[in-house]
Image (cartoon, rainbow, N blue to C red):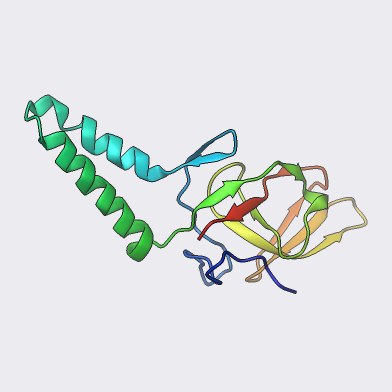
Length: 145
């Protein structure tokens, strides 16, 4: 079985349990809005009350640099773009999907099995197992890095 990986191969933020940390916080019409934007806005607006004209721009740049360093080296994270939701029963082996709704970490499907009692068992790359209703809406993603 092969997982669809980003162009570089292994996704950034891949944990030993097979789950991938992601940076995104918000999506509008399928366009991910980076959490780095929140760092820039915080750096900008938290320093405006000090009245120094150049200070907000300096702190916005420092906040972005800190966020970038955090997501590259301290807690590596991949960018992910949400795709259209679909029922869990339609997941395919190798497909990445959000584990907790529309944001947060993602996992790759290793195998699926429909139990006689009607529950769908999903095994993720790395050994984790989830149990969900076959019609439960999941959010597939496209990993960007």
